[in-house]
Length: 90
Length: 286
Image 1 (cartoon, rainbow over the protein chains, first blue to last red):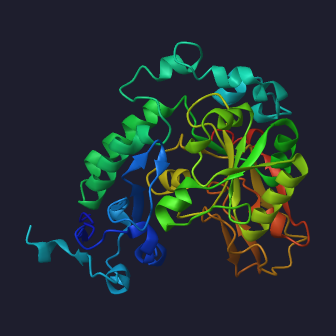
Image 2: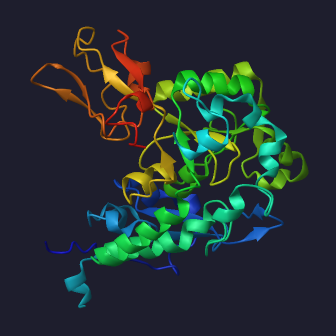
């Protein structure tokens, strides 16, 4: 059986700076591939979600990505790209 | 008999979590290194620490799978399963037993679900939004470290807690007791696929110890079922479907986790719980 290779997802973190406040991609993904994590804690407390860089978007379950591109379409910052491996050139 | 019932005083009539002694403060202390059954299990390469302990191996496995490398994926999952075999993460508990658990475990506090926050960006900051329950004396550490509980907590009376769980059951969340790999009972989650980490790790990646099936299996009484379909759509485990041939609900016994969401939705009581251990072919299906 041929191995199934999932699409490659890239997040431009220069553009995606406040993923927890935005969360559009998190809520639209049919298979919930993405996850958001806090990056900065002050005395165990999370900092303002509107402050750039306090949260970080992560691809948690890439194997479940179908490449439907809904996250790409919904992203207001055009920060997400989803490509199949042949397009990546590997 | 699972290890939990073996070592924590469960028997044929009552599973371990219905043994009141398991809600004592002693359970919590067992978690401290070198003091309890957990010691042997932590001897592996994994550092203790809730969800984070799995972060690295599981992420490597997922990445391998995404790249089509099933060999590496299976190897890592196999190792993780071997290591976690004696350290269940969560167990599914049906609603009627959740009610009994809530009679025993105090204090109870509603709090946010961290999985839902991570995967769907849900912010649960008040009682109306909370979906998780902290249960047992472990909740007392809130007094010392309130800031650890992001989104804050709301302590509930037993009655309130029961209404809370019933509310989410109606909405379609199944219930699980969280052990987080230790012998103590840490919380009672109300979850569904795909945002719940343990469900996901079990169903998508085969991490069997992350989510153990409940003590029960659901059966459809086909004399009572009229095929209305009220139960459909509530199963998180792909066990429940409408069987067109018989025009009734159909439950796959081997897929069923015994969460009972279909049972609580059935207006005719056509779904019944059977003890998993009493069914020869399912007694070892956890």
